[in-house]
Image (cartoon, rainbow, N blue to C red; front, top):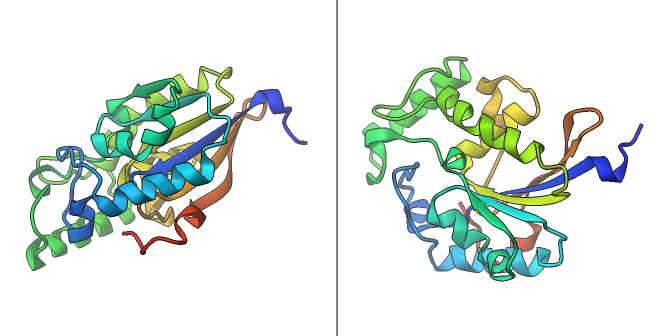
Length: 217
């Protein structure tokens, strides 16, 4: 049975555009408040050009600039906008902002392998675990769903944090988070059915709006 249109919320969930840290393969995390680079700005402009006529009621972003800049076109239209630190990227602790090297690459590989094996309470050094990220996301999700009058919302956040969030929304085990692929300025289009109290995935990792730009990370 299909949900009544007035009992459905459309959620347009994006990852931020490219930064110089992304381009260079440097981990950012919540402790790095980077700006979009030139390509990232073009990605944001392309996303706005493609979706500017969506009937968005509210914009939600993390507290970090790269998400604000990724939806600047929509903000400049005067749409209501809220920032929530609960949507920030995972904290990678003392590994953030370091140039790629063999030792750190092995560290990340082993850490994410540990998470995939189910050990999602394991933190990065001086940083967060996926469980801790999820716990700060849950109040934001509850807030969004408490506002059924907002029929369509745009959320801009971060790669690892998106993966954590999507497992929660679709009731998937947290250690399966890597199944949700992403790239810079990709779109996940979800619907929440208030009657069934469940989310549906309509589009995943969609980048049709970037087809005329160089490949992002």
